[in-house]
Length: 262
Length: 371
Ligand SMILES: Nc1ncnc2c1ncn2[C@@H]1O[C@H](COP(=O)(O)OP(=O)(O)OP(=O)(O)O)[C@@H](O)[C@H]1O
Ligand SMILES: [Mg+2]
Image 1 (spheres, chains in turn blue, red):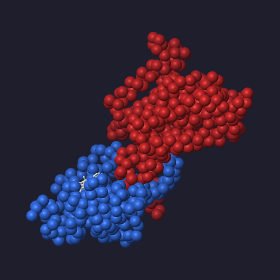
Image 2 (spheres, protein in one colour):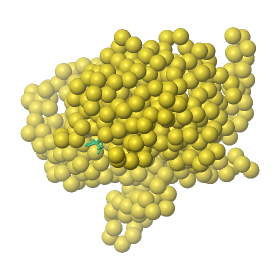
Image 3 (cartoon, chains in turn blue, cyan):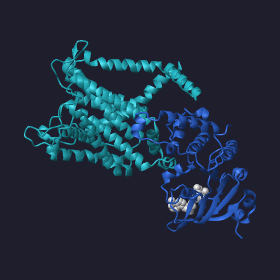
């Protein structure tokens, strides 16, 4: 697999700072803090209902935290309109593949270039900026090659096997040239082989591009195999945060996962 | 760098080689459209002009409904706003002096009318951005009623339901789209008012088609489709969803406005409808535009053209058949028969080919390519 470009040196830490999120009486997140270091693969795990998706949605601006904030380097992401985040270097993929089914892979991934390009109806209609468009198309092909979906560029997404569509979703997130990539359950619905391949790809892209990856994942094998750091949520609280070996051995984590009560 | 240029050029050559049948097809079609006034009489020209009006309107509507996913029945309203705006901007105060007319050059008036429709569309976008599906359909329909009411009550703009007002003759840098003596000829045929309007409408339809095609293949089109398919994903990819929706409604309204100006020139009259059900700017027209984009295949620009040919062309052809060759099916009027035909076409499309004529065309051409 060819590296899609050079290692980035402008990757800032993503800091979740004392984030609390309440839905009426439910506290989905309570005073959660952790930092995704530049270039790290950081996993966010926890049992069902622990607050992982909520945390993801706070970071990507879909939910506004009740208190606390999220920063990317100096930039405060908390008050930023969600459509601005891509332009600030936050890319995200979706748990339930959110691609346009009747468009081609190429078209879907090109959408990721939206924040990097300009031009409205007339510019498009008059075909202004064809030259730059060609450059973006070339980059999209590069990214798709990196994810191993280059041979599907002209297929309709609806016709793709699930595992391939999952990769296209990640390709689209990478097309915004993120410094931080948020992956929501990238291995959900994949078989064992595909999961292993996905793990290799995620590790590769973090290393080759130097970008940070924050992933929510249920597959423990995958998480422990590729993560540099693991944060564990349970009932909205952060109960562990550290390297995989340490977290794996943490009695509270074991208790949360096995549901053992003393 | 030079290597890049070479590969770019050779890829153009490759594309040209593989697509020559369609290039030839387009060339033949253009030629036929260009010489149409030579072999077609005025009645046929009028029918053709009416189809071209449909093309401009349908292309605009398919951008909104098919590409951006916003159901709208407001098209006739924007046709009316376009027609009246043109008459007001380019017109005079009438014989009795009770009309508003600014007397601008007609070309400026067309541009102004289109711009006014775009702005009115933009003004409606806070509503269109918040509603979805059938709710938006019903809300947009209210604009048709608003148009009916305003058209009837603002006589000094619309001319009123009894007489209406004449649209000013279009002219382009002194070349008038009216009969003249002597008239220029092509292959011995005098190019008079109807022939001139045919060429004008043809140019407008081609411009509308090319603009829409380019936009659909560009950044805007991708943003519209993303918003249509998944707003959260579109947002995550940096698309301002509210803005993209407003943009689609604005653009679509502008296309409808241009179709409205063309309608005024075609009828040689600007006159508000007497009721909401039948007339130039009525619910019936809203439905026939929706029929065009559905039959053509939602979101497809060539499909919208095909839909316009069928929906606007059929009643014209049947009327011509009745007057020139005495065709008749019992007491059914041509308009009624074509309504049945396109009603049936919609049912067939929905049941068997949701991609519409565009999908059928695509299937035919790729099969050809495979051979
Ligand atoms: N929009 C919402 N409105 C109300 N409560 C919510 C909302 N979203 C999440 N919650 C609640 O917040 C808590 C955390 O949910 P969340 O979906 O973040 O957990 P999760 O860790 O992603 O779980 P899973 O592994 O099942 O996906 C749950 O109790 C959930 O019911
Ligand atoms: Mg979840």
